[in-house]
Length: 171
Image (cartoon, rainbow, N blue to C red; front, side, top):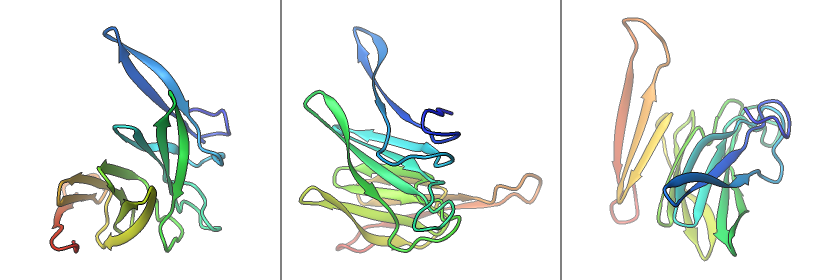
């Protein structure tokens, strides 16, 4: 844990391969991270966009509501460009516990489903909720894969995966 902004506040790092060596080039910190936000709970990068989950951040008074931060690369540095939240938040939503990005589409996992965000004119907006618990998410073209594990040990441990396909604008 990186405790610069409080216990379990978190941070994320950008590394670049320079002359065959992975070198830290940037440390990402959001504008409002505090203790127990768990910033860095999930990370993805595509081209000049990095997304970072803070799945335990308090949102609108709800404990562990969660947020996802978007960072963009411009003029040789990374800067926060947007903060995303679920349209409806509640305690233990854990929005941002897993994330994926492909092009202008983002998939954000939570305890109540996967949230689809799309970028239009430089702004990310929630467009749909795929209503299944989504502890793990993956996005590839017009397919979304959502994974769930009960988290219980023992012989009765269960889990499942759901595949959604985007067809004519609807998942």
